[in-house]
Image (cartoon, rainbow, N blue to C red; front, top):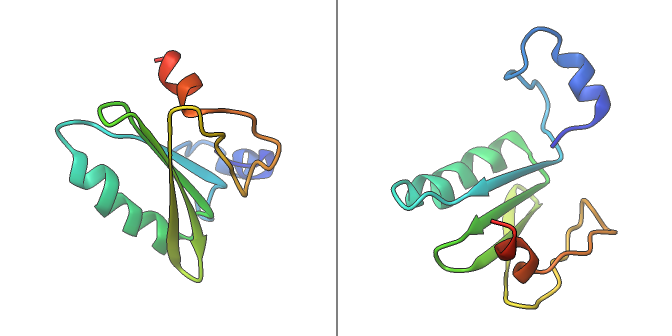
Length: 102
Protein backbone atom coordinates (compact mmCIF):
# COMPACT_ATOMS: atom_id res chain seq x y z
CA UNK A 1 0.00 0.00 0.00
CA UNK A 2 1.37 3.40 -0.89
CA UNK A 3 0.45 7.05 -0.68
CA UNK A 4 -1.05 8.87 -3.66
CA UNK A 5 2.19 10.86 -3.97
CA UNK A 6 4.20 7.61 -4.22
CA UNK A 7 1.82 6.30 -6.87
CA UNK A 8 2.19 9.46 -8.94
CA UNK A 9 5.98 9.20 -8.66
CA UNK A 10 6.03 5.74 -10.22
CA UNK A 11 5.35 7.02 -13.73
CA UNK A 12 5.85 4.18 -16.23
CA UNK A 13 7.67 1.97 -13.71
CA UNK A 14 4.82 0.51 -11.59
CA UNK A 15 7.05 -2.03 -9.84
CA UNK A 16 9.89 0.33 -8.86
CA UNK A 17 9.45 2.13 -5.54
CA UNK A 18 12.33 4.33 -4.45
CA UNK A 19 11.03 4.93 -0.96
CA UNK A 20 9.17 2.62 1.43
CA UNK A 21 5.44 2.10 0.99
CA UNK A 22 3.24 2.24 4.10
CA UNK A 23 2.30 -1.42 4.26
CA UNK A 24 3.06 -4.80 2.73
CA UNK A 25 0.58 -7.67 3.06
CA UNK A 26 2.05 -11.13 2.63
CA UNK A 27 -0.20 -14.18 2.11
CA UNK A 28 1.80 -17.21 3.24
CA UNK A 29 2.24 -19.83 0.55
CA UNK A 30 2.50 -23.43 1.81
CA UNK A 31 5.39 -24.05 -0.60
CA UNK A 32 7.32 -20.85 0.24
CA UNK A 33 6.68 -20.51 3.99
CA UNK A 34 10.31 -19.61 4.89
CA UNK A 35 10.57 -17.03 2.13
CA UNK A 36 7.22 -15.44 3.03
CA UNK A 37 7.77 -15.29 6.80
CA UNK A 38 11.55 -14.92 7.30
CA UNK A 39 13.42 -13.78 4.19
CA UNK A 40 10.90 -11.15 3.10
CA UNK A 41 10.71 -9.84 6.67
CA UNK A 42 14.41 -9.00 6.50
CA UNK A 43 14.07 -7.39 3.08
CA UNK A 44 11.10 -5.26 4.13
CA UNK A 45 12.90 -4.12 7.31
CA UNK A 46 15.99 -3.13 5.31
CA UNK A 47 13.79 -1.10 2.95
CA UNK A 48 12.10 0.61 5.93
CA UNK A 49 8.49 -0.46 5.41
CA UNK A 50 6.73 0.67 8.62
CA UNK A 51 4.18 -2.14 8.78
CA UNK A 52 4.07 -5.65 7.37
CA UNK A 53 1.11 -8.02 7.69
CA UNK A 54 1.38 -11.79 7.37
CA UNK A 55 -1.84 -13.70 6.68
CA UNK A 56 -1.47 -17.44 7.22
CA UNK A 57 -4.64 -19.27 6.20
CA UNK A 58 -3.15 -22.67 7.06
CA UNK A 59 -2.49 -21.69 10.69
CA UNK A 60 -5.45 -19.29 10.90
CA UNK A 61 -3.27 -16.40 12.06
CA UNK A 62 -2.85 -12.76 11.13
CA UNK A 63 0.40 -11.11 12.19
CA UNK A 64 1.05 -7.39 12.32
CA UNK A 65 4.74 -6.50 12.31
CA UNK A 66 5.64 -2.92 13.22
CA UNK A 67 9.10 -1.59 12.40
CA UNK A 68 10.86 -0.24 15.50
CA UNK A 69 14.50 0.85 15.23
CA UNK A 70 15.08 -1.32 12.15
CA UNK A 71 13.51 -4.48 13.61
CA UNK A 72 9.94 -5.76 13.36
CA UNK A 73 7.94 -6.26 16.54
CA UNK A 74 5.31 -8.92 15.85
CA UNK A 75 1.81 -9.30 17.27
CA UNK A 76 -0.09 -12.44 16.24
CA UNK A 77 -3.90 -12.35 16.16
CA UNK A 78 -6.28 -15.30 16.20
CA UNK A 79 -10.04 -15.92 16.09
CA UNK A 80 -12.15 -12.95 17.30
CA UNK A 81 -9.25 -10.70 18.25
CA UNK A 82 -9.48 -7.16 16.89
CA UNK A 83 -6.49 -6.40 14.65
CA UNK A 84 -4.56 -3.27 15.65
CA UNK A 85 -2.55 -1.35 13.08
CA UNK A 86 -0.22 1.57 13.81
CA UNK A 87 -0.47 2.71 10.19
CA UNK A 88 -4.27 2.46 9.98
CA UNK A 89 -5.45 3.50 13.43
CA UNK A 90 -9.15 3.38 12.48
CA UNK A 91 -9.00 -0.19 11.19
CA UNK A 92 -11.89 -2.34 12.42
CA UNK A 93 -11.17 -5.93 11.46
CA UNK A 94 -10.90 -9.30 13.21
CA UNK A 95 -9.07 -12.42 12.10
CA UNK A 96 -12.43 -14.22 11.72
CA UNK A 97 -13.50 -11.58 9.18
CA UNK A 98 -10.26 -12.06 7.23
CA UNK A 99 -10.59 -15.85 7.21
CA UNK A 100 -14.30 -15.77 6.28
CA UNK A 101 -13.66 -13.74 3.14
CA UNK A 102 -11.05 -16.00 1.59
